[in-house]
Image (tube, rainbow, N blue to C red; front, side, top):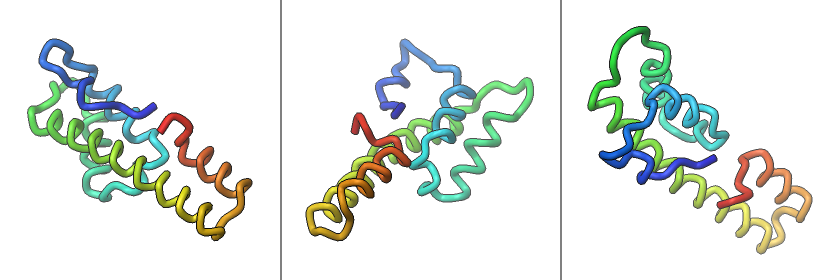
Length: 103
């Protein structure tokens, strides 16, 4: 379930805690910087405080970065398959593991 930057249009402000949880649930998020993951998690578990502009900017930035990372990860898997480094079964397991079906 990749998010996109259009999810953050001025006319539609998302539930930032939900967006942050979705970002953390993305299997490719393990490739994000640890500090960014901590900041995302902090924004989810903070009690009774509104989301700050900085946190919203972080969520938008991480959403864009995850989209780019997902493309690069799938490209790397595809190249490895094309070069004969991995077989079709391994490629499918990797695509399933990182949930890259729709990318």
